[in-house]
Image (tube, rainbow, N blue to C red):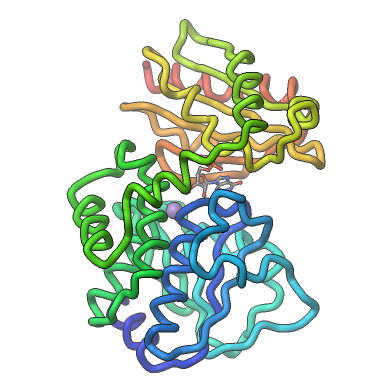
Length: 323
Ligand code: 5GP
Ligand code: MN
């Protein structure tokens, strides 16, 4: 299928590229990277990602031109390419607007991908969708311009947790090194993504860390952020991105959970697990999904109730895996 996708990229001229709601570095990096790559081949592309685009990713080449809202029109093109999205519903309002005549291509690395589309290439072993884009370019002999290299590098950097998660291996590092050869600057990009926190988000982090609770003899760690905390610190939901890592990074913790109240009162749950525990099944029980060791779901509030229900399910899962 990889070869067929390469052929499609080579032969078609107008591409619409989509990625998922609550976009992260890989959603944006893979979409903008593919766009820049195709533009360099003289193709026309448009990128559609349900907004808002987190502030830390707005420096990415092409980010200002992303369509973040569904205008009342259909989306035309010779091919519709959906990246990093488990199911078509993950592209939010754009799902309704994509042209039914165009070829629908699904490129992803989530094992629970529903395999939608006329062509699908799903590779759970890949650390990031951005890595798959690099491999497509390599397969087709397409040149990766510097702007695309930067975007694709950020996709790999963020989906591997700065090259620390269990999906970090030779393939991730070699691909990243190749992108550095093509002009991606590791220090510059890491600084832009990770070292420009706002004072407000750092204050929010302080408040969130103070909510730490340990359960099941220290095997589950929970953190949470309420709308009140965000109001008081002047922060947006995106300012809490990555806070789940602090719950997982405690000695003895098997599962770290971060609960974030959304403006509409729903609760966004981020699940992170350590060696020996797969947590995507529990996220699935709540209508979500993701990767074995990093998953998410959206559940209804209030937050106390959401915490109780999720904690019960995670505790049961830990007991059943005898850890
Ligand atoms: P995060 O907790 O950082 O939002 O998400 C971790 C992983 O779980 C990501 O790969 C993301 O795509 C996936 N994920 C997060 N929320 C949802 C959700 O509501 N549904 C599904 N299917 N996957 C999710
Ligand atoms: Mn990804």
